[in-house]
Length: 446
Ligand SMILES: [Fe+2]
Image (cartoon, rainbow, N blue to C red; front, side, top):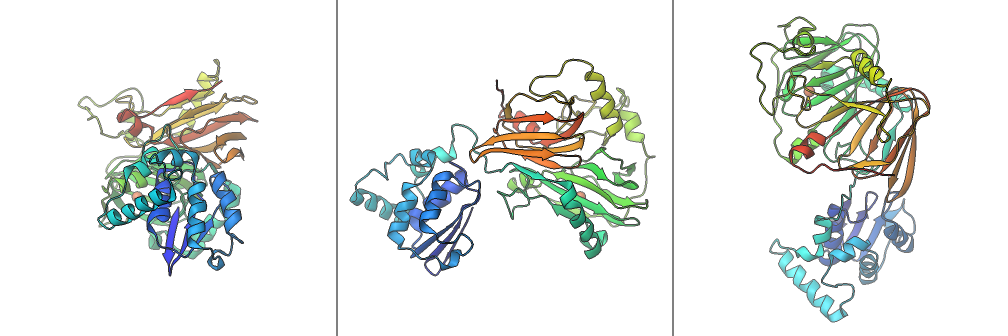
């Protein structure tokens, strides 16, 4: 939610307003109590909390022409107070909406005085800060690859991989525009590399995964070892390892990048460094890591630390499919189908400390029962097709997904997956972080 104050007018973007969202509630309270304004205009969208959408219709003539809206400050504020979401109203347990006007005015004057000292009353925001259950600002969202591909290719005509350093179109969650996030903690984007190009070597503290979606002939080099990128392969760039990409083939190659950029940004722990060389020298032959760590064997002296990422940095799709097909001879889990988590084979833990990754197979005509978990999750369809149905405060949303499509299920949103054909899904989330902190929960619904 954005709040712009200029010349006594307030433009409030409530398109991502979800009931009791902490950030929204804080800003809304700030507007109501502390911002001197002559006019308030509200920009609302499909996921905006319903009561506020009614308020918008009552107070804004044209959602596309907000600047022209004028309203008396006091009435507009009262309407906003009256239409605060139920949980926000509960948060304001001082009874501000119920208190006599004189008492309310006295409190508002108090809030204004302490506001100048950098203080604000907790009771105005307590419930939003400590919700009864997750109230994610993340919106369910779906990106159809067929609709995106031409734009990814157009980026290839506008800028070189070397000039861009990384030629990526970020997939921004519609409720988090401008934040380079697909969920609160994760970033995702489509990266293109054209034949003959090199995306120069660098390293950063952010951890990255690549999921190859389109084209062949590219490679990723990690810490001195190259791996050829084939459709569906899942490749890891661990934190602070040098990596570069190149395309020795004859066709454009596109993959999905998934990084923990928002999480690292939240922690203010981002560092990056460019290499002095464009491409890394090969210090190990291709396939070395897979041979050393990917066959239930490890080197004699391998003793990884707790947070050490996997040395196995490529998980070939062919091997993942083989595993899924193997377990698919059994009975599917009613809520998950056939689902496995990727692990560091030396430890059994997540290959990346900040991003959990999963491989899932749904038989033809199989539908999962409703399920929810506290980790907002990004799904990618690799093969097959089906429908994801997600329950959210804005109502139920369904996405018909096809190969290479990406969709997001926000935290604690119950959802089902129905496959129209044998379907392979890849997914990733911040689950290992939540589990390490003792926060992760899930629920299997009837
Ligand atoms: Fe990078």
